[in-house]
Image 1 (tube, rainbow, N blue to C red):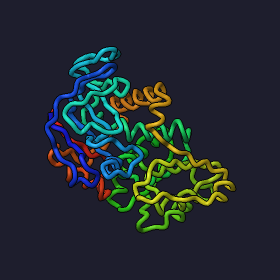
Image 2: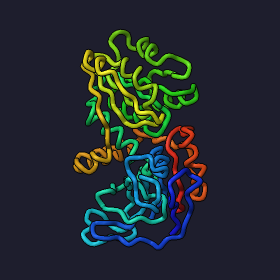
Image 3: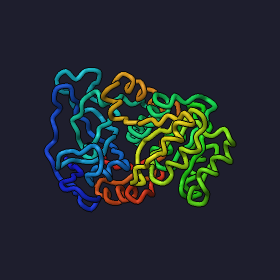
Image 4: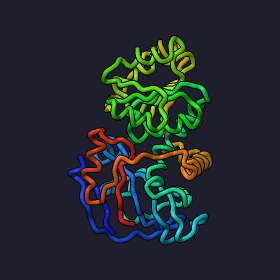
Amino acid sequence: MKALVCSRLGGPEDLGIEDLPDPVAGPGEALVRVRVAALNFFDTLIIAGRYQVKPELPFSPGGEACGVIEALGPDAGGFSVGDRVMVHLSHGTARERIAVPVKRLARVPEAVSDGIAAGLSITYGTTLHALRDRARIRPGETLVVLGASGGVGLAAVELGKLLGARVIACASSPEKLETARAHGADDLIDYKADNLREALRRLTGERGVDVVYDAVGGDLAEPAMRALGWKGRFLVIGFAAGEIPKFPLNVIMLKGIDVQGVHWGAFVEREPEAHAANQAQLLAWAAEGKLTVKVHGVYPLDAYAEALGVLVRREAVGKVLLDLGG
């Protein structure tokens, strides 16, 4: 089989495509023929050795995929050969075949395409966990989404609207903001052209916002946090800007703010039943047409450097997918 392989840490130019033996499904595992794999911003960090997940070299990037089960190992219950499944892992999906624990699979409804299923698990799974399990967002509350045009940002816009929130999308260009509007955002802020905190005040008055969804970090985090109202919730998703912000605790104290960490990988391991319910909900919404999962681009495997480059440069508007010809 062909696989995208990271043999030394670095950038996309340090990866290569190799021919590897087909894997074999072990106990509790399924052998999945990958049709489409999804890449995320965290893949650019993993291959550089700058992410909390540090696989042993060599490894393949890619944390999610859609494929078909070709074989089942011993004690791998709940699935059948031929089932089309959504896969989520910390890494390893950018290869033609993978042996994966069945607990990392979800059966894909017929109405959901391979591309949507490949890009649904992590970004939308993270976001549903953040908004529903952590922030417990309520209909009518105001949700601010930083980096609203990326994979997780658009997931937050769509799921925020689906859960009944007023969504304020924040991004770095009018074009990116129009994409967020097309996916349900109620209000838009270009933080390259406007002062983020003042813009949020204009939109919400003295009341402030209820929830901030931050996958960016850096200089945007503190002004967004300061725009929170009484008992607001700040969701820490990630640090695409590269800088981990430091908050003034006096503001958090005076407003009764909750700063909530969202570590989806730990949630998957520690609360598997709640995770499985979230994945089933996402697939059901996708089958009903309530989630669109915008795709930035679909790339053949040998165009992996171009696909990862879009993420490195933070140009992606939606999901970046690899077509593995399944």
